[in-house]
Structure formats: structure tokens, C-alpha cells
Length: 303
Length: 303
Image 1 (cartoon, rainbow over the protein chains, first blue to last red):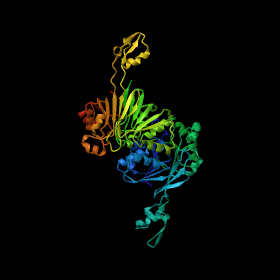
Image 2: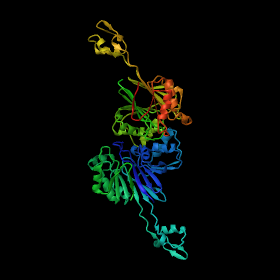
Image 3: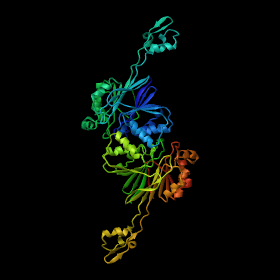
Image 4: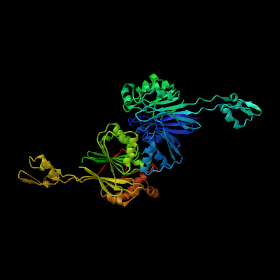
């Protein structure tokens, strides 16, 4: 896969404040573009950062709190007004379909493109998308309403051909077997895959965990991912607020990343009470040093 | 009334483009604050311009196209998350109630404040709000979906007391009669209202007309208003687009203002195809010289 990266479109929690927008991540894995959550104003952020929204093929919605999906109505409408024809798949909790279709029925909007709703399971791990390049799993989070996280894992990559090690005139149709580790017979000889290919690059993975109360089970669902985004709505000194609202503190987000043996952590979903984010970053870094802040408009490489 | 003014929060049509936001006007009439339409991102604009949204007592929605109401979900939620207790009245077409309640039911949102939906009539003029200070009428517009405009008219004002013309020691309770033009008896004398008051200021009025195809009937509904906002989505050279999409050209908006004998016209709801708005302004001014462009963040005095 040529690229695997995540662009943060919104980093704030609950209400727009201090210039922050509401949760939405663009995940680009090779030729595939996904949107994860879609708070109000996401289409404005997509335009601001020059993202081509017609490329988005799937939208994953974690849960039905407004700051994670109220931008969906407008984004779907704008795609329609711009004559999108390509089908769009929307994965989200039960009820999302009803909300969207009730809204569009009353707006007399008949979308220009086919839309498919896929209901996520609130209580188990499920493979919800599986392509040549990538597999997406949903998993349960522990919020005040049904909520799932998502893990995007590159498929096992193929071995890399070393051209100078290939027998002269080997036809192209043999390459695929060799890249898949299979030996081939050519000109009455056995060509060993291991002789003329290099081991594949390690597959990379990205986990999205928002919104959730701290739950070590989350680490199990995200084992050894390259990049984990975990909400860190509060400082640990406001643990009582985190517990009351089913959110996580920055320290706890660090613990999840450490337990998952992730390579890198991004924290976000900042409470409007914090103007300065350094405290949140320092707190997470004390537990998990390779932590970054979610900054709107910034793109993070996975792996 | 101490003030009567309109603040433009969004000036663009259909899709957010060229930095423009979607339709929403804040109308401030004395102590009363109203929102007219609420496109996606309205709550961001409210915060940007330092507007105290808890003061808004009524929201008027012209029609159920997304660019005029998709911001309502987020604004109502934010009022809730900020613990609003004061009741909120929402006036809009049939279906708005269903859309909002379906959305909040699925979000498990139970608003912290009482909300009252009032269905607007798509086919007649109706008084939909009537207070001590102001009367609001809805009237039919000619769009591709049920749509109403709104006229805000100050109530007839009271005469102004001229203190030095009052009899000595006249008790305060007589003032109200005098201000209302009624003579009073005091100390065995008749005190004439006309002797000790000045005529009242003329009542002012603001009309909101969006979205609509050009329709001279609109001018009848807005007769002699001080300020009329009329959509002018297209230049007249794109009349075919205006006709096809049930919108109005800038020239036609000027004609409506002229026919209504309005004092001033604001045009807006600009198509995304126009970067430069001078052409729209010049076209309207050629018919109705006292025309202004709707500029986001700008406040316009009524009268």
C-alpha cells in the first residue's frame, strides 16, 4: 500500500469551543478513503483542508452523540448537490439509518447516489469491511450510549520481487505466485520464491477509540497497532468528571496505549475547559512517551 | 424599542464555499432575540461573533432544505449541554418536529429545557408570534418545497412624555394613559395627552424572504418594510438556473424591494459560482439603489 495516514478534522469534545471542531478523522489507506465520525462542520473542514470528498467510499460512525455525527446530513447533501454517483457505505449504530432517512424524507431529498447503511454491533468484535488492501473491525467501547471503536489493519503484504534474481524471460504471470511466497515451475526448473523475493513489509494498523470510559479491554482490541487514537477528554485530576460522563483521562489513554503495546498514541476529544493542551500531553507522555496531540488539519503517518 | 437590528451569520447558498456559511440571521428587537434559519455551522458563527445564544427565545425555520436547518441539531444540543432552562419556541414547516425528535431519541438526548414546535402554514399569512414589542407574520414563498418568509413588525409605539409639560406632582400611574394618547383627570383638571406628549416614533419592520422564485406577491406581504432581506442566488444572466431551482436573480430581488416600497434591501444566498459579489450588487442597485450585500458578521439596523 502506497500510503496509510490519518488527518484530524476535529479535535474538540461536545461543543465547538476555542476554535476546535468536532470529531472527524479522514483515514487514507492506499487508494481507499474513509471518514471516521462526522461532527457538525466536518464538510467545512474537508473543504478547508482541500480534501476531495468524492473519494470517500465509507463513513464509520462510532456512536449517535451529536458531536460525532451531526455533520453527516450536510456532507451527504453536499455530495448529492455535487452530483456524486458512486455508492457510499455508512457503518454506524442502530438508529442512524432512521435519523438520516427521516431527515431526507422531510427535506424531499432523494440522493443522487446509492447509500448503504450497515449496522454496527454494540457488544462484539466484527469485521465490517474487508477489501484487497484493508480489513476494518469494529469493537465495543464503554460509553453512555452504544459506541464502537474501529481498527483498520492492512492486509498481509506480499513479498517483494528482486528483478535481478529472476530467471531470464520469466513471464509476468508467474510474479503473483512468487510474491505470495509460492514457488513456480518455469523452463523445467523450480523457481523458489525465497530466492527471488524479499520478505514483505510489515502490515500497519490504526485504531480509533472514542468516546469511551477507560477500559483495559480496549487495549486487547487494539493489540500492537502502529497508531492508536484514544480520546483523552480530561486531565486525571478531573477523573470524577471522566467517570461521570464515560470519558477517559490523558493518563488513562496512555495506559491503554501502553497495554496495547501500540507504537504511537494520538490523544484528542479535548474538553472545552482546557485552553492549553500541554497538561494533557504531558500526562499521557508520562505513561506512554510516544504520544502526540491531535491537531486539526495535521496528517499523521500510520507506522 | 431600544434597538432593532439584524446580524447575518451565513450568506451562502446550498453548499459551504468560498468561506461563506449557510443561511442564518439573528434578529434583535429590543429585549427579544430570534434566529431565522439555522444552516449547518450556525452555532460556530454564533460563537465567532460573540452572540449569547441563551438569549434566543424563538427560532424561525423557513423550509426544510438542509442549508437552512441542519445546524439546528447542534445548536439545540449545545444549549442543552450548557444547561439552558428557559423554554425555546421553534416555528417551522410540518416535519421539522419529527426530524428533530427522531434525531434526539436516537441520541438519547432529553433536552434540559422545554421546547415547543409551532407548525407554519405553507399557504397563507399568519401571525405566529405576538408580544408587547413585536408581531411576527409568516407568509408563503414560492420554492420547490413548502417555504415561508417572515415579517417582524414593531408594535405601534407609545407617545413620548415631555416631563416639563406635565402638571406638577402628577403621579406616575397616569403616564401610561397619556403615552397611549388618553387624556386624564388630575387635581380637578383634564390633562390632555396631546399637550404633554410627543407623537410616537414610527414602528419599524424587517422582512426575510428566502428561498423563493421571483413572485410579485412577496412584495405585497412585505409592504413598506424598513428592511427587506431577499435571496438573490443568481445573476439575471443565469435566469434559467434561477427558474429551474426556484430561486431569484439579483435584478428580480431589486424589483421585489421596489414593488414593496421598502426602504432598504439586503441581498444574499449567493450561489457558489460567484466569487465576486459586485455583479449581484450592481444588478440589484440598478433597480433598487438602496441595496446592500449580506456580509457575514455584519449587523444592519432596521429603519
